[in-house]
Length: 420
Image (tube, rainbow, N blue to C red):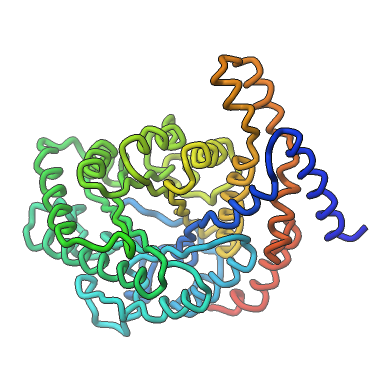
């Protein structure tokens, strides 16, 4: 029996199996196909960007490792993204940071405009994908103090306000040209290394900066703003100005999206538990999915328990109200493989969540917690892998690990290994 026949036969068995539990596996495939995942460009170059030839991220961000083959320019980064997406089924988006502009040199971040992303827009048009966006409020002389939008220096604060305003215009242009709304996420590294004497002033300044930034209305059909919190960063251990409570309140009051990053909370917290609460007060939210091995270490996403719980909550609470993006950077392994493994893991978790039998909720509503436990354990060994393998086959991408590894190794041998 050849590989394709084996996968097809397994799919047919799985479809019948899930049918016995009241699950339409064909409908699950359709839902999985139309659930987009935004792939973060910064995995491909270690968050370096194209403003200068050397350097790396700051503001509590650290990429470790020196695996050969890092993308050195935008053309190589797009080439690597193409390779990664050839191994990922379903609907993809690509998430950019402002430092990935192609300016030819000499253009300040506060002066960035849509034309500096023209090649990215054309690339996305050719592939029929959407582009998301992020201001880059780190790795810059005006962020050296550790403060940007909450800086007490009026000139510094005004500079970053102009930068974020420019980024909003760029995101809106992405939405207009591509015909797909762009999500723009605001994250800043502002905070104190030691115990501050005045947290209120910093947070008041951040609020005033955000108010000024958002005072210019944008068509929500073209772009949508989001704000992202963090517990702390390296060198900012005692107080992060943009805390979860700050941004949750700001998002609810100002009708902007809240971003929940799975690496930005205390190690005992899980963003899966926050999704349902946030959606009671917000029309939609944005997720940045990572894997915090030792708090915000940004490891490649894998199919672990928390990822599965995140996917379960996305499906249970409403897929149309939760936007999924990935956010990790690992330079110890092949970077193209990191994209493929992480995105496929997110899709596998969604596949399992979509295949959840409706009986589970009915048992809980009826107070049958014994039945819920038994069925919950049964779900873990149901043949979801056969459904995902068929999904890959239908999308003409590798269905199994061997196929992914062959593609990664071949691309490394022919392309990335030749970069110096």
